[in-house]
Image 1 (cartoon, helix red, strand yellow):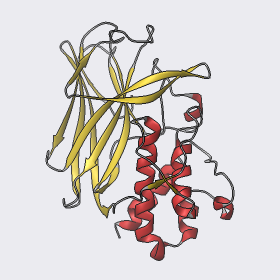
Image 2: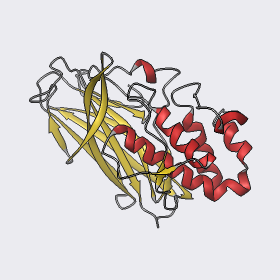
Image 3: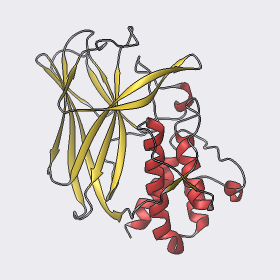
Length: 273
């Protein structure tokens, strides 16, 4: 587990937290398309005000034993947390998380769930949206994912760093969604490229899916970029993205699944100065 604290005698239950670009299958394994490089540790993530920050939460528990997933915050008036269950669909011989279903907290269930399409499931994956309120002061907020199975608890603590950066209203445009079998960051790259290169087109309301929320988050990056473009310069953004001058003339390909996050780090840092 990454950064988790296990309380209790059993190790059969766990919480793992990944970036939005590490999709997992029903066995809890990272998809091969998203598995390059070392996963980023999600322990003290930086976030912008008036925007979403999203993470993937993977829960394992003894089969057919009740578990309860809670989210705690301190202070509790800075961030709104929304949890979505990821629903997998079969594509190219793989189970890939795609559609999202909002769930109430605390979330109680078993693995596998009733009427689960994947009878051999070993893990449930969730999409966690953290919405940072617009008028809060920069500060640190403790966000805890708490998993209860019987008398045992697993706690995954995060110290979320709310920065001075504030997301303007994102543009109502978007690049096309990448193929479901493409690396998860391909949708983010396409959306940012559309805004950065001026090739974005108006799009209608998207369905609630993993890829649509990845695109939503990338459009926040476009909005932040537009606030820092003059002071930072295009060359600095391309360097953070590990992209060359041909970024706008050819389809981008990231060297690793989470390399896009270096661009996001750059934008947050620059917009906070």
